[in-house]
Amino acid sequence: MNVNLLLLIILGFLMIKIGGERGRLALAALFFNLTFMFIMLILFNWGFSPIIVTLLTSVSITAMNLFFINGYSKKTLVAFNSSLIVLVIMMFFIFLSISFMHLQGLPSEELMEMDMYSMDVGLSFVLLSISVMTMSVVGAINDIAISITSAISEVHFNSPDLTEKELYQSGMTVGKDVLASTINTLIFALVGSQIALLVWVSDLHYTFAQFFNTKILVTEWVSLLLSGISIALTIPISTKLMIKKLKKP
Figure 1 (cartoon, rainbow, N blue to C red):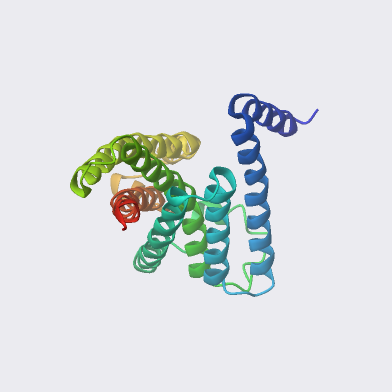
Figure 2: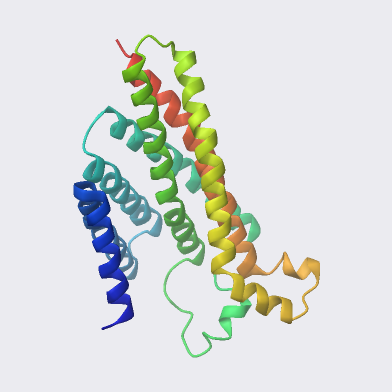
């Protein structure tokens, strides 16, 4: 049996066994999200605007992650709205980062492996890079948004007499804990996925300046920083919106 298929079966079994109905929904959402991304690539190839297609795909994935898995409620609606606000803000930050740091295109380390292929893909590499980085932050934004809105909703349900200020403090306390753990997860995911590259770069005896100006590493580092910024922005925005929703007369 193919190893990829075996791992997929194990993942599906564990998600259903441990998560029950929610696990089945999450597994189905995973396949739907992969389908959305596949359609996104097809639309790119057909010449549609990468920015518009990426935004529509991100909205579809966000809706799938929140409404399909968790159902329609106040907390999922607020999490959805918060995610969209942060997503638009992050697309602006991503555009500025790529434009000013010239992160678009392929790094020299990858060009050596791409010599046999044509670089005339008919797409703007700036827009393509914006799409890639935007898709990399969508999942983190969704996770943080629903975590915050669920926590505040639960606190308000158990203590309905709390003021807006007290609810905000509770939400930010939860947010700080989630922020720390998520940032650590992102850092270790980056380091773990790039260990082979780091060893290779160290064998090339790059200087300190060359190391931190290597495009392939800088791109990953900037992606990590942008993910962290998106998480940090999601916490207060989702907290504020959830409190307004709960306290709305």
